[in-house]
Length: 91
Image (cartoon, rainbow, N blue to C red; front, side):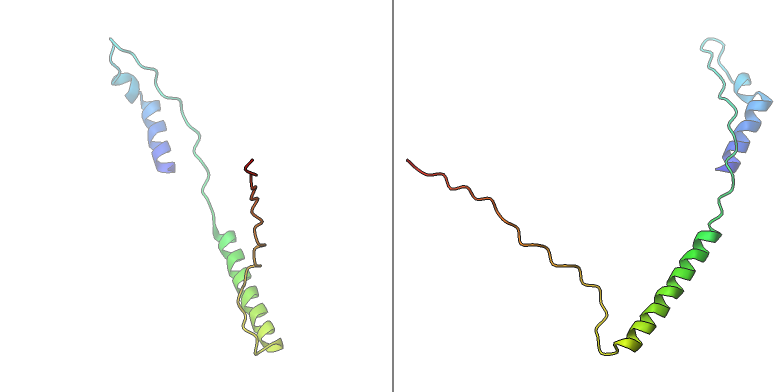
C-alpha cells in the first residue's frame, strides 16, 4: 500500500499525468496522497500469547480443583418458546 502511494505521488510530481493527458479531453491530475503509517501488530500478538498462557494456567488450576469434572462449555438452554396460537372461534 505504501509503495503504491509513494509511486503514484512520484508520478504526480514528475508530471506523468499531465504529459499523458489528451488535449481534446483534459483530465484533472490526481492529488498527492499522504503515505499511511506502518502497522505494527507485535503488541496484539504478545497480548494474545499472554491470554493463551493465562487460559492454560486457569484450566490447569481448575482441573486440580475438580479433576473428575468434564470441563466443556455448555450454553445455557434456551427458554421454551411460547407459541401464540390464536384459535378463532367459528361462529
